[in-house]
Amino acid sequence: MKESSDYQPIDQDGPKSSSEMEDDMLISKHRSARSQRSRRMRPVIALAAVLILAVYTSIVVSVAWGMAKESRRHGTRFLKSPANDYITYESHVMEQWEYPEDIRYFGEPSPEIDRNWHNIFEHQNIGFSAELMHEIGREEEGIRLPDGTYFGSLMKNIYHALHPAHYNLDKLEGSEKAMFWEHTDHCMHMLMDAVLCQGDTTVLTMKWDENGARPIGNLTSPHECVNWDRLMEWVVPNSVDVFADGVLVHPKFGPLFKDGKPSKGFVDSLASSGAGKVNGVDQ
Image 1: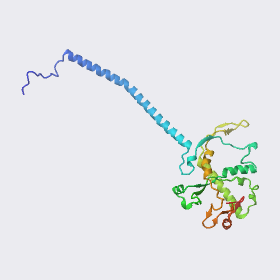
Image 2: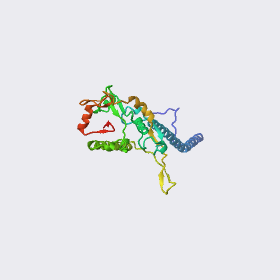
Image 3: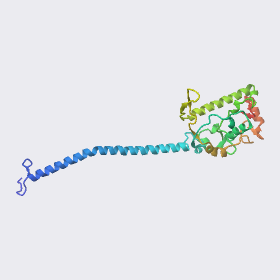
Image 4: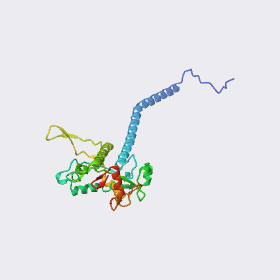
């Protein structure tokens, strides 16, 4: 093929003109400068990436921690309870003992102490929905009340066991005495289980005893406690007087209470089972 007289191939191996050499030098300088700028920018870019990642991580952790604290403060329970929405937490310094001028619960028995304990346990018996009973799968083990709710309890009391003579418990004999101590042991185990269940992680700081060369606990450390007044906002309106006539009706022995007192069928059933009474209240 004959080449056109107007076209002359570039001789790649031939000598370059001065203008071409200048162009090559400019391109080389440009590439060198760009390479240097790139090398200088690498640490800056890496640092910026680390800072962005740190800020992002901080935001995520902060939001997650804030959500966790908020949900914890307002209560998130693993198991279903009709009172879960009324669980809130607060910082509370526990009373380690009661002073003589302010005895409310643990002094020698008195009408005032009995009244204070009564106020705590007055609403211990509650009625909760059939829907919840179905959800926890306990219909076959439940007691349905006349209004369609199910019978439940939230509290235990063992104060009477601390003063058996005052409450005539020292006069119990035979099966009644055995039943009383079985009941007391049961409540003590429930109390122990409740302590283990809650798993209080409050750190009690230590300090030096002014009257002795030994460390003692700082009992003013605050604990994370359920707000009792808030819980009672659900408990009180949902409490049930199970001693009222016709509320508790056994499928075999009939109504357990008549005129506010244990019915004959209830008393006979207790006698046949070997159970007794504690302070006039059947156990």
